[in-house]
Length: 336
Image (cartoon, rainbow, N blue to C red; front, side):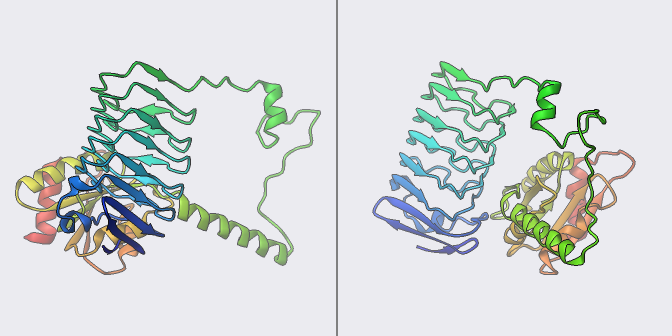
């Protein structure tokens, strides 16, 4: 047992692993080194309050048959339950908004799967190798299914896709969307959109309301992806197309014996500041790799607040950097 992440604790009672507290798990997995035989764990209970499951958190827990995922959970990391070959059922709650690549890959005993309405994308290889899975019912919120998401699901017989939602008619738009821009019809007063309020007291209350709204978004809408950050000495932070190149750069660096991880902000606002701070603990430096002159580096510097060096590498004019260039920039700026 012990503490980890953001105000979280873990303990083993019998053959059950409990994760408790209120906050983000991050990339630390202290139980991996302290549990003598992870295959002896048969049940994982993640209690309400835990906000994310980190990359590879329970990878290889081949004896686990049951997992409890709380309503507070917003994301499940890459390969989080990969190789949990005895897991039979997964219930993803409606407030979970993100599933990582290979999250449940190789769960070959999985026969039941519920995907909550918060999920909009099934990423690459998320359920590949779930050879006992017979049916999948997608919620209407899903808009994309990634490459190989259900590859090697050899027992899959039935897939229910969300129905196509017809476009609203003009009359429905008028009735259901009074805010919509549809010109100035004769049967409706003009919509006036303004944030101006001449009374300072009213304007202050409006601003306070917006500040509460922004804070709520920061707490609940952050999305990111962290790959191989747990044992890394250095972290590459990239978004968009640059992050895909960063994945290869991490691979090349590790082949050269340099332990590098990748942190990919998916939402640039709200920016995953807390998660970057957690991922950066104990690291030697951060390289912000972008296809520009530095749009994100200030956000990263503000997040880590001088706790470790942060450097920038970027190409301009539409030139896309090669992964080898990123590795060389990392060496030049940090290792030399």
